[in-house]
Image (cartoon, rainbow, N blue to C red; front, side, top):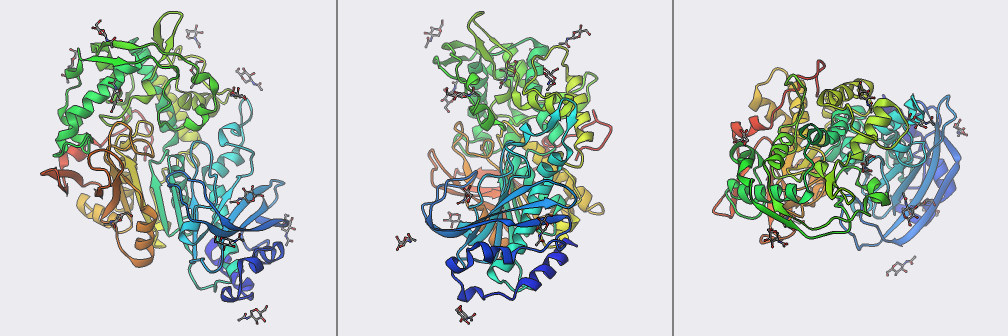
Length: 589
Ligand SMILES: *[C@@H]1O[C@H](CO)[C@@H](O)[C@H](O)[C@H]1NC(C)=O
Ligand SMILES: *[C@@H]1O[C@H](CO)[C@@H](O)[C@H](O)[C@H]1NC(C)=O
Ligand SMILES: *[C@@H]1O[C@H](CO)[C@@H](O)[C@H](O)[C@H]1NC(C)=O
Ligand SMILES: *[C@@H]1O[C@H](CO)[C@@H](O)[C@H](O)[C@H]1NC(C)=O
Ligand SMILES: *[C@@H]1O[C@H](CO)[C@@H](O)[C@H](O)[C@H]1NC(C)=O
Ligand SMILES: *[C@@H]1O[C@H](CO)[C@@H](O)[C@H](O)[C@H]1NC(C)=O
Ligand SMILES: *[C@@H]1O[C@H](CO)[C@@H](O)[C@H](O)[C@H]1NC(C)=O
Ligand SMILES: *[C@@H]1O[C@H](CO)[C@@H](O)[C@H](O)[C@H]1NC(C)=O
Ligand SMILES: *[C@@H]1O[C@H](CO)[C@@H](O)[C@H](O)[C@H]1NC(C)=O
Ligand SMILES: *[C@@H]1O[C@H](CO)[C@@H](O)[C@H](O)[C@H]1NC(C)=O
Ligand SMILES: *[C@@H]1O[C@H](CO)[C@@H](O)[C@H](O)[C@H]1NC(C)=O
Ligand SMILES: *[C@@H]1O[C@H](CO)[C@@H](O)[C@H](O)[C@H]1NC(C)=O
């Protein structure tokens, strides 16, 4: 529906100078952009305000490094456009920003890069490297979404919820593609290849586009998606509640030592000693955490607490209060209590009557959510409520406009599950972002590369595996396991990244990280080259510079002779990634 309206709109506007005869200077003017805007009535519900247009040609512009992209020293000529629109019948104003490359470098592509934390996106220049037009949206509210959830206590702003959930990006893309087509004078029957790339909430945003605007995108690259929002965000409190229940608040160094010992013990299980646990499943199946009890640890005194790679890091970095802590030297031995805590965190969240509510991080991941704070008045380590979970509990579940829970008094495993259940229902059509029926996207020929660091300590890696399985079974109800994997392989592939942390490499494991995902995706979409493996490069350590071909799930990597890696099928390993959430009566996709 949207597609055909857009095409009609573009056709009416195509009577403009041919791109071959245009320069950035002639195209990048307010009047030229105004003439290229889709008219009111052509995009249902979107009324563009021509008088709001700004257009400035930028020459030799340099780009800042974005999430997941490295510094690019190339300079670019582009048109910087801003334009506002309103929703029909509402008095709202949404500001869009577009970066259009010079007509000589435009490649008939549109590119969207996602944001992170509670920000939808920050830069519209991500497409320049691919000759693609791209855009950003302010979603109609000022600042990050977590500052725009509530109008006041008890009063959710539903428009903002939907805009952040999926609508703002979809509208930005729809308007952007129509504008692109008319701006460059692309003929109405020519395709504008449309790509999305993002990690963390940017990964969730990517899935929101696949699920809701499937007809608009050709290639979507999603990393470590912070989707299944209700479970994902409340789960940030699981480690805290286990600490409280066990009444054990470990010195951070003790948990770090358990992680280091786990990495050391499990490194070789994948057939190669390289400091990387490429098979966290074999680690889970074979390593006994109890073997770490009694090992000594030492961490020097430090003047700030570790911020890690957690979802929500942006926010915490701006909060001076967390960085002022002074922690004394920590010298001790791993305790049975510390191991019991680690063990329970690695089993995941269960209700008091033993039903599974959520899945854990993988063995050898950092215990970021279990980090404690040093209290100098008692010379002990105390609970540090994770604000990623605390803020979600207050603002999104309790609907109280405060930034964090003030305590975990009376908060049990069952409370966490109640909160998850409340949020799952309330946000089922917005933030949850786990609709498993991707028929529109698939039938329009869309392709997905989904990747996830195997030692992500913020968004559990198994969370991606669970959604993959939801899509696999919902999309192929009539097929057996192998056949459904094969059917998915044609258009949706999941790659786990050995050793990697949350949307980045891991300081504790010198593993590979995918660096050329867009090139791989363009080759898949435009040239039909299916990525049977994912190109990734080792950034540091003994094997720095090595290219690895990451295995496509459910195949798992196994090395022989330290040099050759094969992707193998291992049922016991796959089973170790599989969870049933019987603590909920509704299906959890
Ligand atoms: C190119 O632009 C010039 C000057 O505006 C115009 O006279 C000419 O007809 C254009 N040529 C094409 C092929 O559009
Ligand atoms: C489209 O609608 C908006 C908002 O109602 C209005 O400001 C704008 O002038 C309209 N555009 C045109 C070309 O009439
Ligand atoms: C951009 O850089 C090129 C090469 O350095 C130079 O020739 C050109 O004049 C620059 N353009 C502008 C508008 O500054
Ligand atoms: C585009 O212009 C807007 C408004 O002047 C500005 O805020 C933004 O930083 C510019 N973006 C780029 C990529 O130049
Ligand atoms: C919202 O509720 C919290 C907790 O009861 C309270 O501290 C705060 O003042 C309230 N805010 C408003 C704007 O009423
Ligand atoms: C864990 O290993 C890292 C190096 O990989 C080291 O920097 C850190 O100090 C170790 N932590 C502990 C507690 O031994
Ligand atoms: C680890 O030790 C605890 C306490 O002795 C025991 O209950 C638990 O079964 C042990 N776990 C394993 C996997 O051996
Ligand atoms: C953090 O410190 C800076 C500099 O002292 C100050 O400007 C800023 O307001 C502080 N931020 C918060 C959240 O307290
Ligand atoms: C840690 O404590 C042990 C036992 O008390 C002591 O032998 C060792 O020197 C201490 N290590 C450091 C680095 O202080
Ligand atoms: C959240 O609030 C708790 C209780 O006030 C506090 O201990 C904790 O440090 C806060 N967390 C953050 C990240 O601000
Ligand atoms: C916890 O529960 C007890 C008993 O119901 C109640 O008295 C107390 O106020 C509660 N504490 C909080 C912080 O809600
Ligand atoms: C992987 O990417 C690297 C870096 O761009 C490139 O040199 C290499 O040819 C690629 N390998 C494959 C198999 O695509």
